Length: 224
Image 1 (cartoon, rainbow, N blue to C red):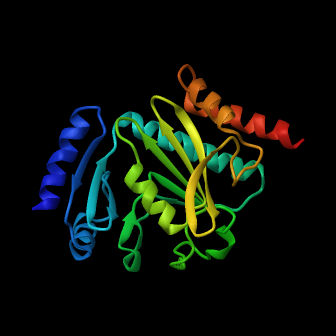
Image 2 (cartoon, helix red, strand yellow):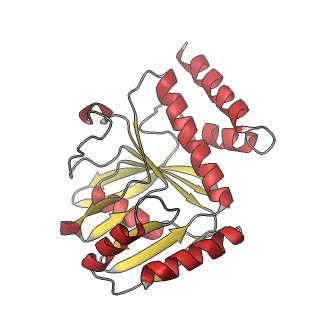
Image 3 (cartoon, rainbow, N blue to C red):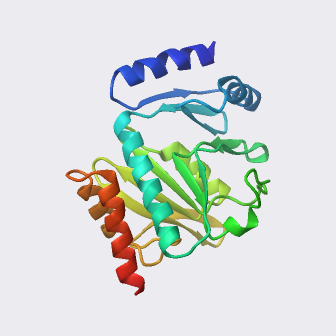
């Protein structure tokens, strides 16, 4: 029944142009897992589960354009900096013992990419992605960010229509963990939020490949 409702809303979402969000309280872990299995891998919807609260997100066209552009920028940076990378897309990240799970817009292993072998690697449960991209066009990523914090994901690039892209790094003080805004990336220390926003702004008037060529030229000038 839930998956049927999701399918209907997903169709409605792509007939419109607005990211849809559904929040369902009092959902068991078993129901969440069954829903993931029932909906399968080939879908636009993304699920977040946080201690009994299930959020279902259906991205808009603009959301996906920005998401994929940022993903291409990350891949380009790894190429130019000769870094290994494993692009995990919106792979489900969940931990039953923590009662939490999320599907990021895009996530990457970069610093820990060498620990993943082959085209279908076994990912250790305690090895979170190094970088997550979150795009918020009409609603905040608060629930997903709470999950990322618990999972120990060290860096998030979060884009909002109002504020553009901000970089957040996970910092630990005593027994407390929280995300703190940072001017520069942890995965790419030469890359700032200011520069990333300039590339996003450039996309307003230029095509995606032109922007990627600009990213490539910029990083080459930084390392030469």
